[in-house]
Image 1 (cartoon, rainbow, N blue to C red):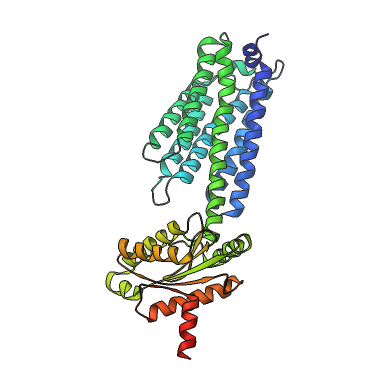
Image 2 (image 1 turned 30 degrees about the vertical axis):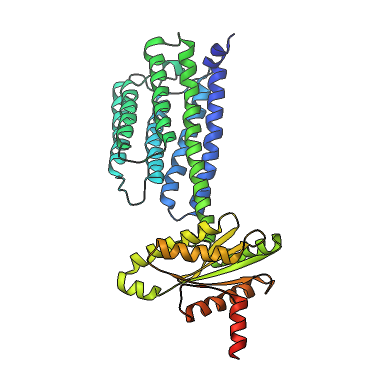
Length: 389
């Protein structure tokens, strides 16, 4: 017996159904976890409702595959309807998940398609004789329902044209369509005579549900990454928030022989807000943050202390902090419409991050009070303070 013959028989169908069931159970587990973790519970509830229906259908297929096993056709008809409705629900869920929140995804077409599936099933039930007689799976064909299933796939494909979906999603629709074509061609035309066609109809569903699993898994990873990024990043500038900046500075202080804190304050930022508006001021703040981030890249980290105050912690083993700070000041002056007052503190003055930030803040205030748009090391500011005293 060749592999193709083995796959086209009951063992192949059992293998396919088992694989699909395992994938669906994993998807169900993820859906339950998502439903508990995120606010948009209605979407995940739909997925939790649809997946068990498909699992039951796959179990039914596995039972019907073996000789001697038979079930009433109306039961198979019922689960065929539920599979179409589940397909509609699952595609609605994935389109909802991957479509931008501001885009309008209309639910009415999906409801109409689901209702029509029930209507077509009712018509099929009325016109099909002997639905109470138990038969084998090879005898089960429901032309109107099968034809409507293909129409649903086409309608889903047309509905996704306006949505910016993942290529994997479009690939899954194509695979599912090919699977249905193979199944219907075998059922209505070839009647099991082409083993490769039977094998394709039994194995393509595994590929289809694998693609859906990957899509859902990627969505979970994206949510986890978003949650993590939200906990450590400032939402406006993209720099580390104050708490995580402290953590990064502590790590750098432990791993470097010498470190510096660069404390930056945008000059006349309130005036910029008042004269140009918050949107323009926020855009300038983002520009300044990006410059500080770029200048800190490879030698340290950048963070937002609060308001228009931005920080950088850098290793000063191979680079002078004054050079980095001056580069930041010069670029901000040349590339934006604002200037910076900057203070510097190094690990020579203190071995505690919070104390270094306080010292850099004092040095920045010295820059601010002596003309702005300049860089002042803490030791210079401290010397000036002693002279005044």
